[in-house]
Image (cartoon, rainbow, N blue to C red):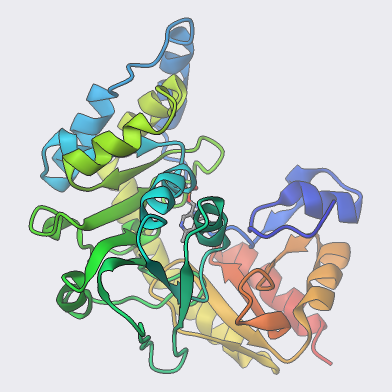
Length: 348
Ligand SMILES: Cc1ncc(COP(=O)(O)O)c(C=O)c1O
């Protein structure tokens, strides 16, 4: 099996260790350890009864529930088989522009989607110290693909920082896959009606801990979403994801507990990581840390796997970062502590 370009590939790790995937403690995918919400089980049961029928191709109920959550009309919402699927259609439209400014380091799937349609991608490097990036060229024939909060740095740009640049581009796609982790989000969703060139992508997989289910959505102008819908198959979201999605987004208690957990666990884990010699974690607004390591990460990753069955995320797929960066999810306090001990063992 070749080295994975995404986090969460437990099968690859298990194959290397010679154990089953369930034995791997996965810090490589940034998934909420409190989830999934309890109501998921009942929703799953309900959905099984519906499996002999096709899903509603308009997904009226789930779109209405999401529209309600964001105080929008449902025709501003397009569901997808995870944000990864919607990225394909965003990339198809972006590729029709003369160039696409991509803030780097960037989630690897952006390049997959953009290169599928031969987009002219121009990397706009993010200054890891200041959080500032410069796009060399702007204009109505230029697109922008932005990730906020940013994976893998955990940086958060504020609405005030992003708003002034929206009008500079023909199309702006903002991937807010991790925004649900913030009790006080900096989402651009309230601005979509004013900016018909703006599309926001949201994932349910990380916050609700359902990456295996595949569920995400785009929020944007209804004409654009209708066009994207025509490019793809009629039922991109399964009945199971449709029904479970409606259930999990209603769980406000789960949301509150998750925010509290992150607010208390994040600083503890951050401080412990930074106390280990040779490791420097960056401050993060969300549920993972980008960590600079004096040790080369591919070797460290292998040792952690073989000796502790711990999987960390190397950052080799983020070309700009190279082999001295790793990314770790924030998990339960006990699991975080287990990683800390394992890292301490490997300091030379
Ligand atoms: C920034 C970012 N966007 C999107 C995704 C994909 O999300 P989904 O599971 O909804 O396809 C990921 C997954 O790691 C991600 O890190």
